[in-house]
Image (cartoon, rainbow, N blue to C red; front, side, top):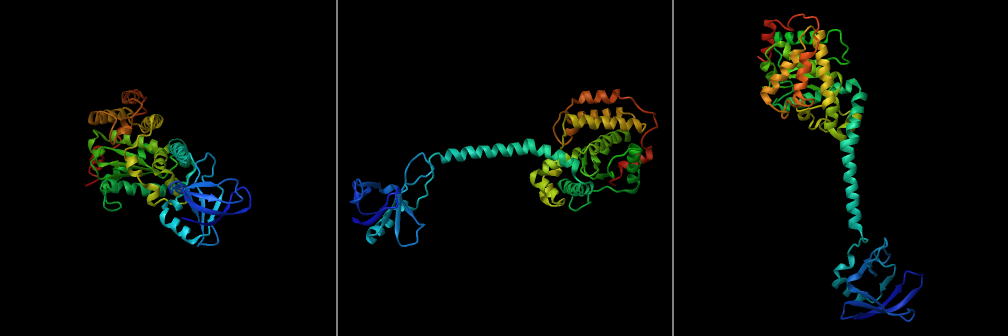
Length: 372
């Protein structure tokens, strides 16, 4: 098998008329030409077809080369003029259209992949948390309030609600008692938010703060408390988180970069902004500094309201007796700093002028029956 062709050697524009034949037991093309300094041997396995030429029917070949430079193909071009030879090569050489990559491409891809993963980790664990804190401070109040409403709606679904507001406890006398408690705790304070306190009909012993000035008490917490002062102590602790915008920071971290971008663009109700936020806040542990600050706020609020700061320590004791460790949905009450230290601090806090229980017996019973 042989035929006519012409060769461009890649070093000059000269066109060499050549004859191509099979050599070395039909494993290579031998290229002979009077203007070539010596015959060339191109292994058949190294042949590659070039398609970027005007004549689509013409077979133009180059040769794969295993070199350290960035070009995995020879600069030479071999144009097969003999139709039978061209047809034979097309039929018998399936590797003609193989795509070549430069040596070390796999290593470069691995290195770039590692760098990309490192960048993602940097974004998730360093930049994003810092950005969430900044966003929590800069987020307009109306947008944060709307975001918080969406988060609370998702919380209700997570806790088993089938429709918005379906789990809200709104018995009038119980609601009035709760409002009395809130007024007692917040009188004369500038919270920076229009505070919204609600009770959800769920047996979990828990309470949590939500972005935009919201605090949610669960029925199970009210039922587990020995006194209204204990409920007031937990409520004051959660109000402390609201004032310090801890739930907003935590929600933004949970929402991730997509959620942050959505909030910047005004998306406060879409799934991108609140995916996973509800469960994150229900199980939130804000960290040592945030919990210490919320404790300090609660102890001061209780003292100013004429309530015993030790009520917060009593609730911590109740949580520890029920749960015994720092895991589960009340982890933020049991987390660092050490619970015993927090109990001691609550018991040692100076009380204000005693003004009696936050609710009388009838109001306390009404609050316990707020869910009907």
